Structure formats: structure tokens, C-alpha cells
Image (cartoon, rainbow, N blue to C red; front, side, top):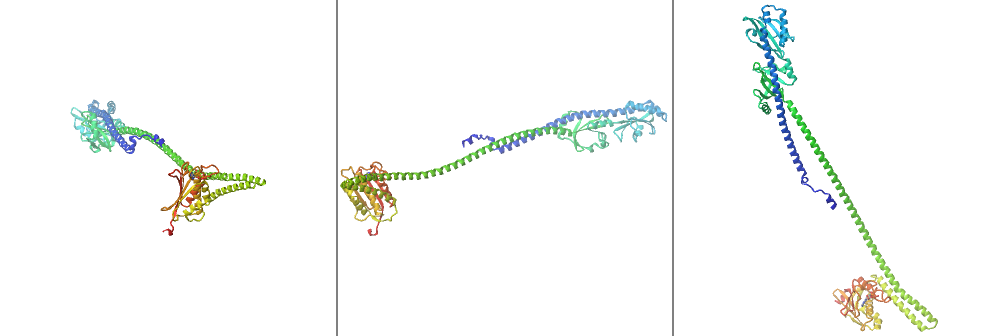
Length: 584
Ligand code: ADP
């Protein structure tokens, strides 16, 4: 697990609440961007409008100058031509001479006006010099001119231009009139070419000259609605810093224009110069578009970097989860392995048990074989000896040999009987047995040995029967075993004594065999282990107590041993007591 934790990066503050932080950042940057666009919009509009206004002021001044110049010149031309001696002479001698026309042509070329015409006192045309083929269709100027001593001005109805009429008089006598026409089409065309809207109006508001032909004759107030006091107008005014020029924005043909109004300098005419603010908007918009593009590229770069980081992070996470999965698989495999080992361990334990059983069997077989081999070998020797004695007719001695052979057979019988009694466990039917009878019978069997060894045997038996469920013979075998062991232990004892006591208890009947021998060599429990013996080979096989304790267990009781108060051995057989109805 530790290898996982080492790879974990410490989580920063930002990673704690990434979503909220991201939203906040987005909002902040959006606000910042909006403010930036708004500010640059204002600043750029301001600046470009200022430039536009300055240019408009200069242009309008030039244009107004050119118009006034043309008109003023024409009016002067008219009054000069009216005093021309040739014309006066020609009008005095009607009909006109062809020389007059030629003179007019020369005059027209010198003055640069569009046409020059001479009329008689009735208003009938006499001579004419014109650059453009057009009729003098002016109805009012000529008669009016005859009545006054100044030029009469009239606007040409069909084209951008004007006419000046002046009477021709000599010695207070009115002889006729001259008409000078001036064409401003070229000027107007120049305006249109520059994309400007220029309107020249008289004090009544009537449009006299216009870069838009369709507006001629219309009223200025009808074609353009002023938007005075608008924000951009105030800005422009501050830029202009020019006295005598009024500026404002107007909406014209549903487009917003910066309007500059100035006097033309001719007959109180006024020039309205309209500069389209659309160009300003376009320029501002293009700069804003540039800004947007830059920010979009920036945003794309940020997005790219973030996405790369995120993808790297996801790769890392994937590899981590891969490792976790690997670890999991390994763990599962280890668990399976352990289960397998455990099961094979159990298997091994079982086979060990089996083999220890087999080993015990082998050990037992060896002991039994050894136990039987010795008497068999001895018997062979005795028989050979007896045969020899018989051949030599020493029957007395031969009979003694047979007696020894008989002893050996008895001994072998005892061994096989013990093994048999062990093999027969629990097979026989059990019956009520009086432990007093068991003791009496067993001591009767052992009487020769006890008597032979001079051992004092003391019995403590109650008057009434002490009954247990059991098998008389096997119980006797236990007592015989215990007494024989006692006799063996008492071999070196000066006053050998064995005490046998039977006692009734609450639930258990007890039978004790005590001796005054040397006691146990080791632990008293050890003596019940099969093949445990301290006796010389041939004297004991170590099965007596093992078999006896097994018989006691088979009968539902227990055989125990301990060291007595006098240092000798004390064996106690405890068995479930049977209470017969006759006892109560
Ligand atoms: P065996 O008599 O063939 O040795 P047992 O199982 O009868 O086999 O006895 C086992 C051992 O217990 C004896 O060898 C002896 O060491 C010990 N033992 C049994 N009874 C006594 C006793 N009364 N006093 C001292 N030791 C005893």
C-alpha cells in the first residue's frame, strides 16, 4: 500500500474546489474582457471621431471656399460683362452682328463660365456662347434684371449650377441684359468622389447644391434629423475647438453622420458637411475584432494547455488504477495460494497422523517380535539340551528342561493374552460386577508370586458389594497388572507391603493399589504411555498400564497414578458406580 501513497501528489488549495474556482475565474476574465472591449470601444471611437471631425472641418472649409469662389466670380463676371463696350454697342445697333457672338465666345473662354448670353430690352436672345448645349430656360431672372442695377441670381433647375443676370444700360437707358451661367457639376462630382455628403442651403433651408442630385430643391430639415447633444456630438465638439462652426450628429438616410455646418460666404448660404461615422465604427470594429481574435487565440492556447494537462492527469490516473488492479490481482492470487498451502498442510497433517500411527504400529510389532523371539530362542536351546539329555538317559535333567520350556510358554501366553485383551476392547457384553470379587479373584491368581516374594498384602473391602458395569476378566487383568507392578517395585524392599482398597463413592466406585516401593522414576503420567518401561528387556514391554488405562476408559472410567505419602506408588481405578435396587 505504501507504494501507492508515495506516488500521490499533495493536493493544492485550488484542487480542493476546482469547479467553484474555475467558475469564479471565468466570471472574472469575462468581466475583465467586457470592460476592456467597452473601454477600447470608447477610446477608439473617441479618437477616430476626432480624426474624422478634423478632416471634415478642413474639407468643408475647402469645399465652401471653392463654391463661394465660383459663385462670387460668376456674379462679378456678370456685372463686368454687362459693362462690356462691345456688348453695349451691339445692343445699341440691333440686329446683332456676327461679331458679337465671337466676342461672347472669347469672353466666355476668358472668364471660364459655362455660358454667356445677351438679351434685348424685350428679353429676346440676341447672341450666345456656351460650353454645353442647353437652353436658357430662365423665365424670371431676365425681366427682373432689367429693373435693378445689380445681378439677379437664380438656381439652374436641371443641373448643379447658377445663373446671374445683369442689365446692360448706357446713359441711364436700359438696352438689354446679359446672363452668365456657372456650372458646379464638376465641384459636386468631386464631393461625391470623396464619399462626402455636402449640402448647401439658403437661409430658408432649401438645398441649392448637393452631392446627391435627388436632394436638390428639398428642405434641409426634411432630409436630415439632427441628434443634438448626443454623446459623440459632444466628443466631436471638444475636438473641434473651432469657433463659428456648429457640429452635431444627424441621422440621414438611416445612417449616422457627423455634421459640420459653416457659412459658405455667399448670400448667407450655409454648408452642411456630413461625414459618415460608419467608417469610424468600421475602424473601431476592426480593432475590436483584432482584440477578440487575440483573446480567442489566447483562450485557445489556455484551453490547449489545460486539455493537455488534463489528459496527462487522466493518463496518470489510468496507470494508477491499472497498478491498483494489478495489486488486487496479485493479492487475490496470494490468497488463493495461501488457501492451497493451507489445504496441502492439512493434507500433510493427516498423512503425518497416518504415518505416526504406522510408526507406532511398527514400533509395537518390533517390541512384540522381540518379546516373543527371546523365549522362542530359549525354548530352542532347552529343547536341544533336553534331546541330548534324553539320548544320554538323563531324564531327570531333561524333565527340568521341559519344565523351563513350559515356563517360557506360560510367559508367551501371558503376553499374547494381554495383547488379545487389548484387541478385544468393548466387544463383550458388560454386566454388573462387584469390585470386591474382582480384588479377591485377582489376589487368588497372584497368591503364588506374592507368597513366593514374602509380600504382605492388606485388603480393605467394604461389607456391601461395590458394583460397576464391566467385564470381570478384564477388570481382574487391571488389578493383576497393578499388583504385579507393585511386586516388581518391591523387589529391593525389606518389608514389602501392598494395600488394596475398594470404596464406594457418590457416583464413582474406587479401587486403589498402594505399595511402599521407591515410587516413580519420572512423571506418574508417563507410565501410561505404551511401551514406556524402566524394566530390563525381557522383564517388561511397557504395555501393562497402557492397556489397563485403555480398559478403564472403555468402561467409562479412569486409571490414574500418583506418589503416595510414604513415597510409594498409588494407583486408583475410578468407575461409574451402579446402585442396585436391593441396596436401597
Ligand atoms: P512393564 O511392567 O512391562 O514395565 P507397565 O506398563 O506395567 O509395563 O509399567 C510401566 C512402568 O511403570 C514400569 O516399567 C515402571 O517403571 C513403572 N511402574 C509401574 N508400576 C509401578 C510401581 N508400583 N512403582 C514404581 N514404578 C511403577
